[in-house]
Structure formats: C-alpha cells, structure tokens
Image 1 (spheres, rainbow, N blue to C red):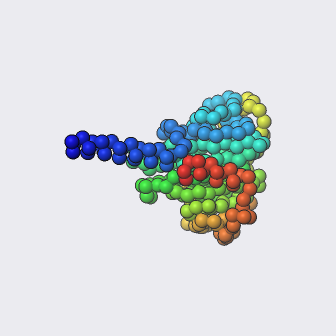
Image 2 (cartoon, rainbow, N blue to C red):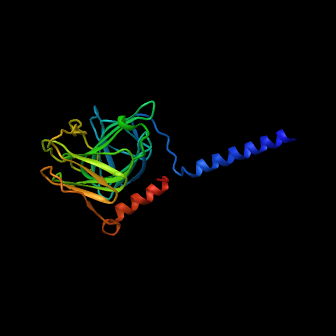
Image 3 (cartoon, one colour):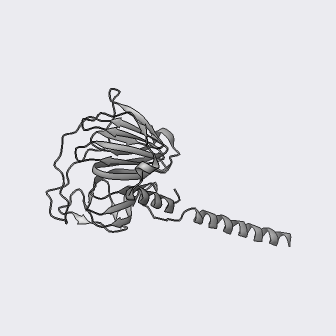
Length: 255
C-alpha cells in the first residue's frame, strides 16, 4: 500500500512540474541551428539571398538564412526568433542582413545582424557560457554587443544612430566608417543584379571609443561616427506604438 502511494505521489509531482514548465513558456517555436524563423509579420517584407536573382516576399514561419538581406515596407514590421530563442523585431522601412546565427554544442553562440536603415528591437537570451559568447547588432558607425538584455537600435538615412537599453547593459563601440552605399528602393519584388554586401560586425581597436550603456540609458552616434556620452531617458518620453508593441510581444514570450 505504501509503495502504491509513493508511485501516485511521484506521478502527481511529475505532472505538476510539467504543467508549471509549460505555463512559463507561452510561445513555443521550433528552431533550427544557423537560421532564424519569422514568427510575426505585418505588411510586406521582401528578401534576397546569396545566389538569388529575384527578391521575394516573406511569410510567417519562413526562415531567414545567414547572408540574406531583407527590407520591410511602409506600415510593415516583422519578428524573428533565433536558434538561441532570442527575439529580434524590425520596424517599417528597415533594411537588415542576418550575418550569422550559429549555436555551439554547449550553448555558445555567434550572432551578427547588420542594419543599414530603420529600427531593430532585440530581446537577447542570457548567456551561460561566458567569454566565448557573441551577440552583436551593427550599423555603419557602431556595433553593440550583449549577453542578455533588451535594447534597440535606430539607424537614420545619414547613418547617425541611437541605441537605447531597457534592461541589462550593452557595450557600444565605434567602427571605422564604411563607404556609403546607394539605398535599396522599397517596393514589390523585382529582378536584381545580385545581393549587395552589407558590412557585418567588425573588430574594435583600442583607439576607437567604447561605452557601456546601462538600463534606461541611451547613446547617440553622429554622422561622422562619434558618440555622445550615455544619458538617462524615461519611459514617458520614449513610449510610442513601436515600443508598446515590442513590450507586449516580450510579455507573450515570458521575457
């Protein structure tokens, strides 16, 4: 009788733990190493990949492979989940490239995303592997590296940029200016000569500036690649539809 009681108790405990684990993960996405998956899409988002002759429109649950470049149209936005379950979102009229999305056997990661125009929001899963971990968002004049935080980067047409941190901290470093590139026109998919090369994350020399930007701070990067010192910002001055939507989506992921 005692043995039967022990078995029943063990079964009940197992079911309770499984239910609790499921409740903590309201959004479930099956991920594959080396690529990102579209989990939410509004409007039109076109993409061209290495070797492709034409751009094409993305759909929810499509995959984005490293080397592919995408552009969101007017009144459009897209969310993708990376193999480490970090979440990245792009606002309207944003151009970006998934440079790298590798996850090692022990959980180490090497992720790089390059933005040439527009807004990106990232909710990065915390790393457990230490120094071998790399998660970088870059634009022409700066690269922002993190291990686990919530932040955004806005890139203007003149390549000035702002990085805002909502949780955790971000190391923002200057990079050598790249040659300016002609902007890619937004519109329906059409034949192209081939994918353009977008600079990915670059190594930072000791002569270049580096700032640690902490929670509820922002840093402005000017057209010539110089940075103003980080300053505080408030939720009231920052709140808009883009921020509100991202925060609501983060809650759905339990992050």
